[in-house]
Length: 413
Image (tube, rainbow, N blue to C red):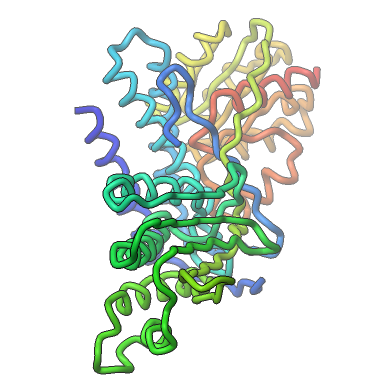
Protein backbone atom coordinates (compact mmCIF):
# COMPACT_ATOMS: atom_id res chain seq x y z
CA UNK A 1 0.00 0.00 0.00
CA UNK A 2 2.88 2.34 0.83
CA UNK A 3 4.21 2.13 -2.72
CA UNK A 4 1.12 3.66 -4.32
CA UNK A 5 1.27 6.48 -1.80
CA UNK A 6 4.61 7.55 -3.28
CA UNK A 7 3.15 7.36 -6.80
CA UNK A 8 0.14 9.43 -5.84
CA UNK A 9 2.40 11.97 -4.16
CA UNK A 10 4.38 12.32 -7.40
CA UNK A 11 1.19 12.95 -9.35
CA UNK A 12 0.18 15.74 -6.97
CA UNK A 13 3.58 17.37 -7.31
CA UNK A 14 3.31 17.18 -11.10
CA UNK A 15 -0.12 18.80 -11.08
CA UNK A 16 1.06 21.68 -8.88
CA UNK A 17 4.12 22.29 -11.03
CA UNK A 18 1.90 22.26 -14.11
CA UNK A 19 -0.18 25.01 -12.53
CA UNK A 20 2.96 27.04 -11.88
CA UNK A 21 4.19 26.69 -15.46
CA UNK A 22 0.92 28.13 -16.69
CA UNK A 23 1.43 31.30 -14.67
CA UNK A 24 5.04 32.12 -15.51
CA UNK A 25 6.28 35.46 -16.81
CA UNK A 26 9.64 34.73 -18.38
CA UNK A 27 12.68 37.01 -18.55
CA UNK A 28 15.30 36.65 -21.33
CA UNK A 29 17.81 33.90 -20.71
CA UNK A 30 21.24 33.95 -22.37
CA UNK A 31 21.99 30.99 -24.59
CA UNK A 32 24.67 29.45 -23.51
CA UNK A 33 19.84 4.22 -7.99
CA UNK A 34 17.26 3.59 -5.01
CA UNK A 35 19.36 3.47 -1.74
CA UNK A 36 19.23 0.29 0.39
CA UNK A 37 16.81 0.40 3.32
CA UNK A 38 19.67 0.52 5.82
CA UNK A 39 20.93 3.84 4.46
CA UNK A 40 19.22 7.20 4.03
CA UNK A 41 18.85 8.31 0.41
CA UNK A 42 21.41 10.80 -0.98
CA UNK A 43 20.73 14.48 -0.98
CA UNK A 44 20.74 16.39 -4.24
CA UNK A 45 22.67 19.60 -4.52
CA UNK A 46 22.17 21.90 -7.46
CA UNK A 47 24.82 24.34 -8.63
CA UNK A 48 23.24 27.01 -10.82
CA UNK A 49 25.58 28.81 -13.23
CA UNK A 50 25.47 32.59 -13.26
CA UNK A 51 24.53 32.49 -16.95
CA UNK A 52 21.08 31.15 -16.05
CA UNK A 53 18.75 33.90 -14.85
CA UNK A 54 15.78 33.40 -12.59
CA UNK A 55 12.30 33.53 -14.04
CA UNK A 56 9.96 36.09 -12.50
CA UNK A 57 6.83 34.68 -10.89
CA UNK A 58 3.74 36.62 -9.94
CA UNK A 59 2.63 36.54 -6.32
CA UNK A 60 0.06 33.81 -6.91
CA UNK A 61 2.58 31.45 -8.47
CA UNK A 62 5.18 32.25 -5.80
CA UNK A 63 2.62 31.44 -3.12
CA UNK A 64 1.82 28.10 -4.75
CA UNK A 65 5.51 27.20 -4.94
CA UNK A 66 5.98 28.19 -1.30
CA UNK A 67 2.97 26.09 -0.27
CA UNK A 68 4.32 23.11 -2.23
CA UNK A 69 7.71 23.39 -0.53
CA UNK A 70 6.01 23.55 2.87
CA UNK A 71 4.17 20.30 2.18
CA UNK A 72 7.36 18.64 0.91
CA UNK A 73 9.17 19.80 4.06
CA UNK A 74 6.46 18.29 6.26
CA UNK A 75 6.50 14.97 4.39
CA UNK A 76 10.31 14.84 4.44
CA UNK A 77 10.49 15.62 8.16
CA UNK A 78 7.91 12.94 8.98
CA UNK A 79 9.86 10.45 6.88
CA UNK A 80 13.01 11.43 8.82
CA UNK A 81 11.18 10.76 12.07
CA UNK A 82 10.16 7.28 10.88
CA UNK A 83 13.65 6.43 9.62
CA UNK A 84 15.28 3.97 11.96
CA UNK A 85 11.99 2.82 13.47
CA UNK A 86 11.37 -0.94 13.75
CA UNK A 87 9.57 -1.69 10.48
CA UNK A 88 9.15 -4.87 8.45
CA UNK A 89 11.30 -4.99 5.25
CA UNK A 90 8.46 -4.05 2.91
CA UNK A 91 7.49 -0.97 4.89
CA UNK A 92 11.13 0.01 5.39
CA UNK A 93 11.67 -0.16 1.62
CA UNK A 94 8.52 1.89 1.01
CA UNK A 95 9.79 4.51 3.47
CA UNK A 96 13.12 4.77 1.67
CA UNK A 97 11.33 5.13 -1.67
CA UNK A 98 9.05 7.81 -0.25
CA UNK A 99 12.00 9.72 1.18
CA UNK A 100 13.76 9.48 -2.17
CA UNK A 101 10.70 10.86 -3.95
CA UNK A 102 10.62 13.81 -1.55
CA UNK A 103 14.25 14.60 -2.32
CA UNK A 104 13.58 14.25 -6.04
CA UNK A 105 10.61 16.62 -5.77
CA UNK A 106 12.82 19.02 -3.84
CA UNK A 107 15.34 18.89 -6.68
CA UNK A 108 12.60 19.71 -9.20
CA UNK A 109 11.32 22.70 -7.23
CA UNK A 110 14.86 24.00 -6.74
CA UNK A 111 15.36 23.89 -10.52
CA UNK A 112 11.92 25.26 -11.33
CA UNK A 113 12.92 28.84 -12.04
CA UNK A 114 15.68 27.77 -14.45
CA UNK A 115 13.72 25.01 -16.17
CA UNK A 116 10.90 27.33 -17.21
CA UNK A 117 12.96 29.21 -19.80
CA UNK A 118 14.69 26.08 -21.18
CA UNK A 119 18.08 27.48 -22.26
CA UNK A 120 20.35 24.84 -23.79
CA UNK A 121 21.41 22.52 -21.01
CA UNK A 122 18.74 23.68 -18.54
CA UNK A 123 16.23 20.91 -19.19
CA UNK A 124 15.46 18.52 -16.37
CA UNK A 125 18.74 16.80 -15.46
CA UNK A 126 19.01 13.06 -15.89
CA UNK A 127 21.57 10.43 -14.91
CA UNK A 128 22.41 8.95 -18.31
CA UNK A 129 24.36 6.05 -16.80
CA UNK A 130 21.30 4.90 -14.87
CA UNK A 131 19.11 5.10 -17.98
CA UNK A 132 21.62 3.26 -20.19
CA UNK A 133 22.06 0.41 -17.73
CA UNK A 134 18.32 0.22 -17.18
CA UNK A 135 17.53 -0.01 -20.90
CA UNK A 136 20.15 -2.72 -21.37
CA UNK A 137 18.75 -4.67 -18.43
CA UNK A 138 15.26 -4.56 -19.98
CA UNK A 139 16.59 -6.35 -23.09
CA UNK A 140 18.80 -8.85 -21.29
CA UNK A 141 16.60 -11.82 -22.21
CA UNK A 142 16.72 -10.80 -25.88
CA UNK A 143 20.52 -10.68 -25.74
CA UNK A 144 20.56 -14.25 -24.43
CA UNK A 145 18.01 -15.42 -27.00
CA UNK A 146 20.05 -14.02 -29.90
CA UNK A 147 23.45 -14.94 -28.45
CA UNK A 148 24.56 -11.30 -28.48
CA UNK A 149 27.85 -10.42 -26.82
CA UNK A 150 27.29 -7.13 -25.03
CA UNK A 151 30.27 -4.81 -24.50
CA UNK A 152 29.52 -1.64 -22.57
CA UNK A 153 31.72 1.21 -21.44
CA UNK A 154 29.78 3.60 -19.20
CA UNK A 155 31.75 5.58 -16.60
CA UNK A 156 30.21 5.62 -13.13
CA UNK A 157 30.91 9.36 -12.92
CA UNK A 158 29.27 10.20 -16.24
CA UNK A 159 27.95 13.80 -16.05
CA UNK A 160 24.23 14.46 -15.88
CA UNK A 161 22.61 15.29 -19.23
CA UNK A 162 19.92 17.88 -19.96
CA UNK A 163 17.21 15.49 -21.05
CA UNK A 164 14.23 14.21 -19.02
CA UNK A 165 14.64 10.58 -17.96
CA UNK A 166 11.48 9.36 -19.72
CA UNK A 167 12.60 11.02 -22.97
CA UNK A 168 16.11 9.57 -22.82
CA UNK A 169 14.72 6.13 -21.98
CA UNK A 170 12.38 6.19 -24.98
CA UNK A 171 15.16 7.37 -27.29
CA UNK A 172 17.68 4.71 -26.26
CA UNK A 173 15.05 1.97 -26.27
CA UNK A 174 14.17 2.75 -29.89
CA UNK A 175 17.83 2.73 -30.92
CA UNK A 176 18.52 -0.51 -29.05
CA UNK A 177 15.53 -2.22 -30.67
CA UNK A 178 16.75 -0.97 -34.06
CA UNK A 179 20.16 -2.60 -33.42
CA UNK A 180 18.58 -5.84 -32.15
CA UNK A 181 16.39 -6.06 -35.25
CA UNK A 182 19.54 -5.85 -37.39
CA UNK A 183 21.34 -8.45 -35.26
CA UNK A 184 18.39 -10.86 -35.46
CA UNK A 185 18.73 -10.79 -39.26
CA UNK A 186 22.50 -11.36 -39.15
CA UNK A 187 24.64 -14.46 -38.65
CA UNK A 188 26.56 -15.46 -35.52
CA UNK A 189 28.71 -14.20 -33.87
CA UNK A 190 26.65 -11.16 -32.86
CA UNK A 191 28.03 -8.23 -30.91
CA UNK A 192 26.66 -4.98 -29.52
CA UNK A 193 28.89 -2.23 -28.16
CA UNK A 194 27.69 0.76 -26.20
CA UNK A 195 30.06 3.55 -25.18
CA UNK A 196 29.34 6.75 -23.27
CA UNK A 197 31.93 9.49 -22.82
CA UNK A 198 31.88 13.14 -21.71
CA UNK A 199 33.37 15.52 -24.23
CA UNK A 200 33.42 19.27 -23.72
CA UNK A 201 29.90 20.56 -23.00
CA UNK A 202 28.32 17.30 -24.19
CA UNK A 203 27.92 13.62 -23.42
CA UNK A 204 28.27 11.28 -26.41
CA UNK A 205 26.59 7.86 -26.47
CA UNK A 206 27.46 5.52 -29.34
CA UNK A 207 25.72 2.23 -30.15
CA UNK A 208 27.38 -0.16 -32.62
CA UNK A 209 26.04 -3.49 -33.81
CA UNK A 210 27.79 -6.18 -35.85
CA UNK A 211 24.94 -6.60 -38.33
CA UNK A 212 25.34 -6.29 -42.06
CA UNK A 213 26.70 -2.93 -43.28
CA UNK A 214 24.05 -0.38 -44.15
CA UNK A 215 23.69 0.24 -47.85
CA UNK A 216 23.63 3.83 -49.05
CA UNK A 217 19.92 3.51 -49.79
CA UNK A 218 19.22 2.23 -46.29
CA UNK A 219 21.13 5.12 -44.73
CA UNK A 220 19.12 7.57 -46.82
CA UNK A 221 15.88 6.01 -45.65
CA UNK A 222 16.99 6.31 -42.03
CA UNK A 223 18.16 9.90 -42.29
CA UNK A 224 15.27 11.01 -44.54
CA UNK A 225 12.17 9.18 -43.30
CA UNK A 226 9.07 9.07 -45.51
CA UNK A 227 11.09 10.31 -48.50
CA UNK A 228 10.85 6.94 -50.25
CA UNK A 229 7.76 4.87 -50.91
CA UNK A 230 9.50 1.50 -50.60
CA UNK A 231 10.45 0.08 -47.22
CA UNK A 232 14.14 -0.28 -46.45
CA UNK A 233 13.82 -3.19 -44.06
CA UNK A 234 12.36 -1.41 -41.03
CA UNK A 235 13.68 1.04 -38.49
CA UNK A 236 13.07 4.28 -40.37
CA UNK A 237 10.25 5.55 -38.16
CA UNK A 238 11.95 4.45 -34.92
CA UNK A 239 15.18 6.12 -35.98
CA UNK A 240 13.37 9.32 -36.93
CA UNK A 241 11.52 9.43 -33.61
CA UNK A 242 14.74 8.86 -31.66
CA UNK A 243 16.43 11.67 -33.58
CA UNK A 244 13.51 14.00 -32.90
CA UNK A 245 13.76 13.22 -29.19
CA UNK A 246 17.49 13.99 -29.21
CA UNK A 247 16.98 17.26 -31.08
CA UNK A 248 14.21 18.39 -28.74
CA UNK A 249 16.73 18.12 -25.87
CA UNK A 250 19.23 20.30 -27.77
CA UNK A 251 21.26 17.33 -28.98
CA UNK A 252 21.76 15.38 -32.20
CA UNK A 253 21.63 11.84 -33.56
CA UNK A 254 23.49 10.60 -36.60
CA UNK A 255 24.94 7.52 -38.29
CA UNK A 256 28.71 7.29 -38.27
CA UNK A 257 30.85 5.11 -40.56
CA UNK A 258 32.97 2.63 -38.60
CA UNK A 259 36.15 0.94 -39.72
CA UNK A 260 35.72 -2.59 -41.01
CA UNK A 261 33.28 -4.29 -43.34
CA UNK A 262 30.45 -4.92 -40.89
CA UNK A 263 28.15 -3.13 -38.57
CA UNK A 264 26.46 0.21 -38.15
CA UNK A 265 26.98 2.85 -35.49
CA UNK A 266 24.52 5.41 -34.17
CA UNK A 267 25.89 8.39 -32.24
CA UNK A 268 23.79 10.46 -29.85
CA UNK A 269 25.15 13.77 -28.57
CA UNK A 270 23.38 15.42 -25.63
CA UNK A 271 24.22 18.62 -23.74
CA UNK A 272 25.50 18.32 -20.22
CA UNK A 273 23.11 19.62 -17.61
CA UNK A 274 23.77 23.24 -16.68
CA UNK A 275 21.95 22.56 -13.45
CA UNK A 276 24.57 19.99 -12.57
CA UNK A 277 22.43 17.98 -10.16
CA UNK A 278 24.63 15.21 -8.83
CA UNK A 279 23.77 12.88 -5.99
CA UNK A 280 26.18 13.69 -3.20
CA UNK A 281 26.17 12.62 0.38
CA UNK A 282 25.36 15.57 2.61
CA UNK A 283 27.97 16.62 5.13
CA UNK A 284 27.41 14.63 8.32
CA UNK A 285 25.58 16.68 10.94
CA UNK A 286 27.68 18.22 13.69
CA UNK A 287 27.64 16.79 17.18
CA UNK A 288 26.20 19.83 18.91
CA UNK A 289 25.98 20.29 22.65
CA UNK A 290 22.51 20.42 24.16
CA UNK A 291 21.02 23.72 23.00
CA UNK A 292 17.93 25.81 23.69
CA UNK A 293 16.23 26.40 20.36
CA UNK A 294 13.24 28.56 19.48
CA UNK A 295 11.28 27.27 16.45
CA UNK A 296 8.99 29.76 14.70
CA UNK A 297 6.66 28.46 11.96
CA UNK A 298 2.97 29.05 11.28
CA UNK A 299 2.59 25.62 9.64
CA UNK A 300 1.54 23.29 12.48
CA UNK A 301 2.82 20.05 10.90
CA UNK A 302 6.18 21.54 9.96
CA UNK A 303 6.52 23.10 13.39
CA UNK A 304 5.73 19.90 15.28
CA UNK A 305 7.90 17.71 13.03
CA UNK A 306 10.89 20.03 13.50
CA UNK A 307 10.38 20.04 17.26
CA UNK A 308 10.36 16.23 17.35
CA UNK A 309 13.47 16.00 15.16
CA UNK A 310 15.44 18.51 17.23
CA UNK A 311 14.31 16.93 20.52
CA UNK A 312 15.45 13.56 19.20
CA UNK A 313 18.86 15.19 18.69
CA UNK A 314 18.88 16.06 22.39
CA UNK A 315 17.96 19.76 22.27
CA UNK A 316 15.48 21.71 24.37
CA UNK A 317 12.92 23.20 21.99
CA UNK A 318 10.19 25.81 22.32
CA UNK A 319 7.84 26.30 19.33
CA UNK A 320 5.56 29.24 18.43
CA UNK A 321 3.56 30.08 15.33
CA UNK A 322 4.54 33.68 14.52
CA UNK A 323 7.08 36.41 15.14
CA UNK A 324 5.07 38.24 17.79
CA UNK A 325 4.94 35.16 19.99
CA UNK A 326 8.63 34.62 19.33
CA UNK A 327 9.48 38.16 20.51
CA UNK A 328 7.54 37.52 23.70
CA UNK A 329 9.49 34.31 24.30
CA UNK A 330 12.80 36.05 23.70
CA UNK A 331 12.01 38.58 26.41
CA UNK A 332 14.63 41.09 27.54
CA UNK A 333 17.50 38.65 27.97
CA UNK A 334 19.95 37.88 25.18
CA UNK A 335 20.77 34.35 26.40
CA UNK A 336 17.28 32.86 26.54
CA UNK A 337 17.87 30.79 23.36
CA UNK A 338 21.01 29.60 21.61
CA UNK A 339 19.33 29.58 18.18
CA UNK A 340 16.15 30.94 16.58
CA UNK A 341 14.99 28.76 13.67
CA UNK A 342 12.29 30.67 11.80
CA UNK A 343 10.18 30.58 8.70
CA UNK A 344 10.00 33.77 6.63
CA UNK A 345 6.36 33.99 5.53
CA UNK A 346 4.08 34.09 8.59
CA UNK A 347 0.97 36.04 9.65
CA UNK A 348 1.19 38.92 12.15
CA UNK A 349 5.01 39.09 12.11
CA UNK A 350 7.20 37.19 9.66
CA UNK A 351 10.76 35.98 10.12
CA UNK A 352 12.33 38.77 8.09
CA UNK A 353 10.46 41.51 9.95
CA UNK A 354 11.37 39.92 13.28
CA UNK A 355 15.04 39.81 12.30
CA UNK A 356 15.00 43.44 11.15
CA UNK A 357 13.55 44.50 14.51
CA UNK A 358 16.48 43.03 16.45
CA UNK A 359 19.42 43.36 14.04
CA UNK A 360 20.37 46.84 15.32
CA UNK A 361 18.90 46.88 18.82
CA UNK A 362 19.89 43.35 19.86
CA UNK A 363 22.70 42.18 17.54
CA UNK A 364 23.60 39.16 19.71
CA UNK A 365 20.12 37.73 19.13
CA UNK A 366 20.21 38.60 15.42
CA UNK A 367 23.36 36.49 15.03
CA UNK A 368 21.45 33.41 16.21
CA UNK A 369 18.82 33.41 13.43
CA UNK A 370 18.52 30.45 11.03
CA UNK A 371 15.99 30.96 8.24
CA UNK A 372 14.05 27.96 6.92
CA UNK A 373 11.84 28.81 3.93
CA UNK A 374 10.25 27.44 0.80
CA UNK A 375 9.76 30.94 -0.63
CA UNK A 376 12.67 31.03 -3.09
CA UNK A 377 10.60 32.29 -6.02
CA UNK A 378 10.59 35.94 -4.98
CA UNK A 379 13.64 38.00 -5.84
CA UNK A 380 13.31 40.03 -2.65
CA UNK A 381 13.47 36.83 -0.57
CA UNK A 382 16.60 35.61 -2.34
CA UNK A 383 18.21 39.04 -2.01
CA UNK A 384 17.46 39.20 1.72
CA UNK A 385 18.88 35.71 2.38
CA UNK A 386 22.01 36.50 0.39
CA UNK A 387 22.66 39.82 2.18
CA UNK A 388 21.63 39.22 5.79
CA UNK A 389 24.67 37.08 6.58
CA UNK A 390 22.69 34.42 8.43
CA UNK A 391 22.49 30.74 7.40
CA UNK A 392 19.38 29.60 5.60
CA UNK A 393 17.92 26.19 4.72
CA UNK A 394 15.49 25.67 1.86
CA UNK A 395 12.33 23.64 2.37
CA UNK A 396 12.15 20.72 2.07
CA UNK A 397 15.33 20.62 4.14
CA UNK A 398 17.82 17.90 4.89
CA UNK A 399 18.09 17.32 8.66
CA UNK A 400 21.89 17.35 8.47
CA UNK A 401 21.82 20.75 6.73
CA UNK A 402 19.52 22.12 9.44
CA UNK A 403 21.75 20.85 12.27
CA UNK A 404 24.85 22.28 10.59
CA UNK A 405 23.15 25.67 10.12
CA UNK A 406 22.27 25.73 13.82
CA UNK A 407 25.88 24.85 14.59
CA UNK A 408 27.00 27.82 12.50
CA UNK A 409 25.08 30.33 14.60
CA UNK A 410 26.10 28.63 17.85
CA UNK A 411 29.73 29.41 17.00
CA UNK A 412 28.95 33.14 16.60
CA UNK A 413 28.61 33.67 20.35
